[in-house]
Image (cartoon, rainbow, N blue to C red; front, top):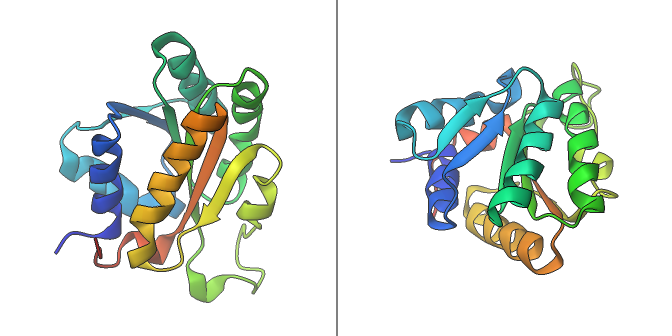
Length: 170
């Protein structure tokens, strides 16, 4: 059976996403595996820094009229997305950020590099939600894209590491 991370990429394809800008990290290992299995559809464009991923997603939205998508790991990697996402917010560009998070079991325990990603992205995002169950993924992804497009703003999806590797529930 496909994992949630595979389902996420399939849903991105259905929204017409051809490329995702990002930087690898252990908080998105499930998604990185899915990108490998997806064989370039959508294409994972590895950048030098998470900040560049957000700026490139914003630039993609500006020049194509499509939703720009970026992905980053949890902790400091997530923090680095903010500059580029504020650029998208202030220029009214539709961007969806997919951000990793520690395993649900570790949340609230001051685990290594744990931050409240949902709180961090609340100001820059028109929509910010954490997927806490595999069956929730489709609704959260669709709502993020609809919000980014209708508000011409940023939508953030937070996916804990353990959820990424669970069996998908379409």
